[in-house]
Length: 224
Ligand SMILES: N[C@@H](CCC(=O)N[C@@H](CS)C(=O)NCC(=O)O)C(=O)O
Image 1 (tube, rainbow, N blue to C red):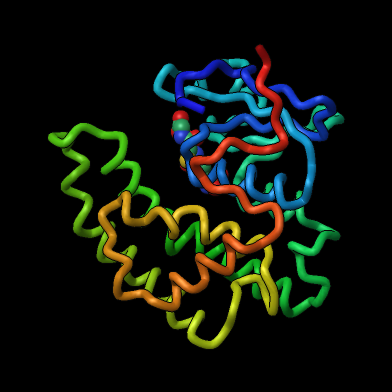
Image 2: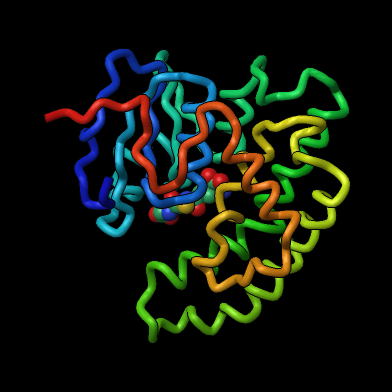
């Protein structure tokens, strides 16, 4: 799907959820991947923030923070923040640990993703992928990469001891961290010094229902 396709290109037969999102955004990919792996049907509303679609009164009434992803439930409730959406969708499923301590570990990594990872690794990708080569924000790249490499180092160290980030098995903390780590090279990060991270990428890709960031989701039907 190109970024330019309209908001209602995809219509599932019965949608449990509606996701307002941007197809190439890692934060929105987290939600798509979880929905696919949980086999939940959803309608996808593509939002174009460059056209101001996250700042319209209609959108701000749904999410006052003016950001995607935004999940709408069947009863018309709205939930923002990718990791909160992951936790909501995964509760009671195999992607959310039953054990108290493992749940705390999962949350720890999801907070780390937002506070110590996404703001560097995803921002560098955004600047490299979407802003012109002479954009002043390019000056931020050295610092973003410095902090981003620190985050990647923390992940690599964890994975030398553990297979996943969501307690003892695969779960939403893995989805959260996979979203921007696997495409970090688009932000100029060299991942060749992180062999264990690559092994984890492969373990994530081997999970049932996995879809790639660039792939068309299987739970959609294209409306003609
Ligand atoms: N912490 C939020 C970050 C959301 C966010 O930054 N969304 C971006 C896309 S990745 C967005 O909506 N950008 C458009 C805008 O700010 O208008 C989350 O995890 O959902």
